[in-house]
Length: 442
Image 1 (cartoon, helix red, strand yellow):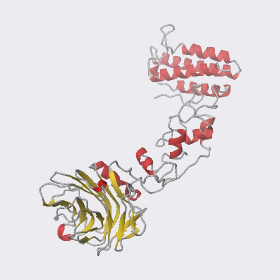
Image 2: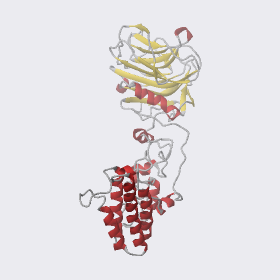
Image 3: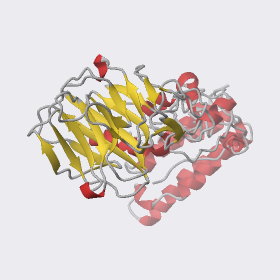
Image 4: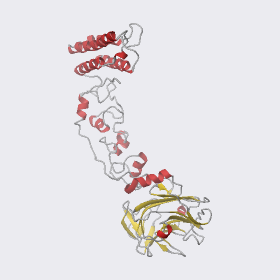
């Protein structure tokens, strides 16, 4: 499609304007913390002896040598499979009787009966609320969920790499839904009662082991253990897995120092590991809190200048024509002052004439091709005549020439138009009207 577009001095200046360019980092995007999370033991804020719940203060005591080691997302909790564990005191938030989601990252160090967490002890003793763990080769390396009176499971990975596990369970339902590395699993392994019974136990919650009448110590490295009083969707779980080593966005933490917390970036869709997500020369926080531009769009007003460039030269990054003179900021030689110098208008008119000569003949209203060429040439000549008048300092003469051209494009029956209805006609008419307006400015 034919377009009247021009290169100007301001557009050239953009290429050499110094802006704040910050290279993106390799890490991924953290996932926004989800509603109805009741506990989140990420290990990063923990210290030897205390497992800190980042979300709600459900801190636990690290018992018998449970330790902190490098994890998948920052630090993780390590358990030796002997007798160490974390004990979290009972709290009403942790008693869940209707629906629960538990998700975490784990790296196994052996293949035995390796508990991840439980509240209420073994499923056979009548006090269990919920629990998750991993089994060995004789049980298909099962990832399992247990509850008061029963358990459900699905075959799991047979390696010692990091994997993400999640389970969604609802009271009264026959089966739980299992996910490994973001993908739903077949399940099918089961024992005990016919339906899930989430008994709101008042016993402590344990991480890394099952503690009570029957004790099982796990030999896992556990990271980002989170419990939700909600049924996370498949999309929610996929997002957590896709975040990878960036993990879940931590409240109040600003990983890339751009003025937005990781949680805010997760909600906005910006990259918490890149301070300038759209590479426009402005920090994401500056865009949200100061310039009020879109941190996901380098050119918020689509005028051909990046938001950072506009802030640098003083134009409005949310208005494609800052001075309101009809020329977009990228084309405008004086984007902060209405109007344009005569020399700029003259050059633009000569470029317009060249563009008119390139018009397809099917846009010209004429009885035959030769007549169409003649009218096309006459339209271009009127523009050249206006440019020549302007070059000689005759602004009014230039306006008269353009006004006579406009009569051939205005849609009135008399005199008849020289172009049929087409986008190019509309664009040329708008261009001529703009040039007449600019020539009339002081």
